[in-house]
Length: 449
Image 1 (cartoon, rainbow, N blue to C red):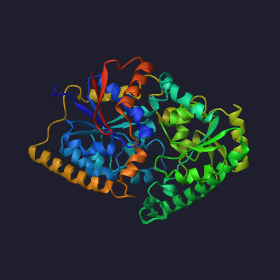
Image 2 (image 1 turned 45 degrees about the horizontal axis):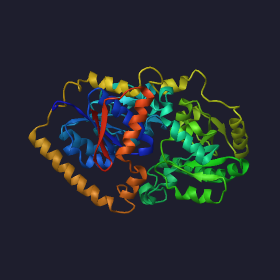
Image 3 (image 1 turned 135 degrees about the vertical axis):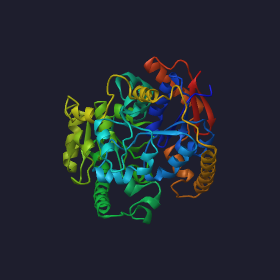
Image 4 (image 1 turned 90 degrees about the horizontal axis):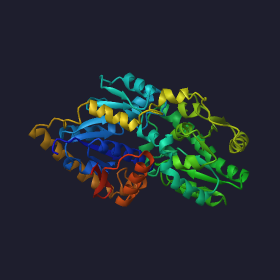
């Protein structure tokens, strides 16, 4: 029908976002919304040919100012959440890195992870009364008990490959970025002010301690695999070089982190979102704080973790965790989680988001069409932007290079997408009337059959 509102779901980091956004797409299609989803970069290239609808943005950074302006001229409404709002440093640092007055001005509504995220949005100096819906996030839907069977086959395969293992999650994009130009010792990555310089120095110490930690863990637990999972923005080669010298260390980054958390003996991390995810599924998380800083340590992951401050303490704590003697930090009442994440029970976050979109009227109407002049201007701007991006895709080492795109968004086939949707259907007993079609490489349409 011509009056259907298309939902546009961009995916930037596939291993982190794809499963959750496919769930959201299936919920939307179940309610009659057609969905276009896939690689964020490639969705942007063809957004002027997508039927007028609602673009569900995953971030609100200044880097998106131009794209948000194009979307607005093309007649798409924008509704947004921030993937990175759950774990952040002080508000001023967060506002400078993650929010832009222009993107907020062009956004029709915001989805918040929880009450803390809502307050963070409202405290931004550029906030202008944009409606905020505290919905939770589809990523935590994938960790709820009713969806844990979705990962059963992956967990079985992980155990076949690695048997028992300690999961080590790294988070050193500033020190070990996949694109060398964005490391802190290069002009593009160089700290811009005193706070950034202090943060960079702190991260450097942690980075060095983590590199020393892996061999120590491997020696202390020769009968276990030490499984290193680098952050999606990191270069894996450094960690592969360390693991190569150790008979029981491996590096892996395939698939979503949730089945790896479910399968591991315990998690060791350095202040990243994975610690929060571990707490949601009631897995033990240990923060190895080789250096401490009240100013530069993200508070939430540490609040939900046990703390080790030197290698001897870490090894002993890991031994206790493997024996089942640590449990989950943060309290049995899960008060910390509930303050930060909505929809841990009750309706899924995905359903709450669709409730909000329907409440905004998108089930009955498409966004208002732009005037012919604005539409033409948006179309031309998108063609020019796409041409520039496609040139940059051929430039090795550029942030838009195809090598970096494929690092963050490995290929997924139509059959793979259909298999994922079938697992969602089997887990929830929903989505029987939904089909998936491939529109182009890395882009799919999820729709009512």
